[in-house]
Length: 266
Image (cartoon, one colour):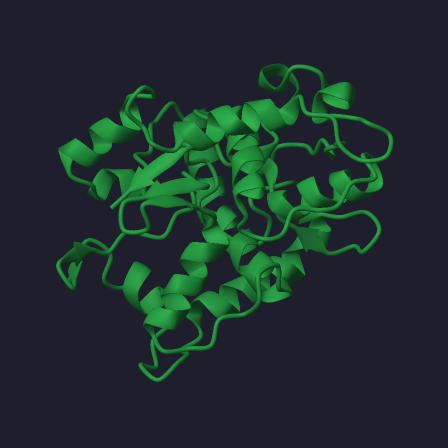
């Protein structure tokens, strides 16, 4: 696979005022406390313990399988990811923190799964992984883990601004028979209870993650589709531009927060 290396940055048009305020405060020697919370902060101590301990974290099963996939030859040229990139802990460090990003040919944003599939097709000449399959989740979680502990850093790319704005509009747009938006729950009622569960702030800090409700690993798109179904709306297909734009906005909204991949959630 060939990953595009992109410069770390602030999140363009979204949250620029907050970034500017933080920079000014830092220059003045003052410290601003980030009030945003990861979904991890809303979990019980026992669930946090599952994520904290790699020997207990069920998502690590997918990571270990992903490590094997990294070295597996595929396609007519018999290339593996390692053939081009070598050791993932070094070459993939920071990659997951910078997606979604603009794809050169289409000039549209793509997420990490789509980047992986483009590499499969264009550089390994192998069949792409189908969305949400075990193979895709394994390799994505392995690549994602290499950025664990790093800050989410959307690219400094002016071309992303319009797509990020589209994602923001989707986040705030009411949908479905329940006539709710993402913002209704995750901005206006974060920390409150819904059906006995605490509503998080919807920061994509830990994907792919193992969800106890699923008893499996899942991508951020799977979670978005769950939310759409929950408000009685028709989910977009996997990989739809609308999902990528929404994921882009979520990354912008979470810029500076640390990645936890692979996470655990209730």
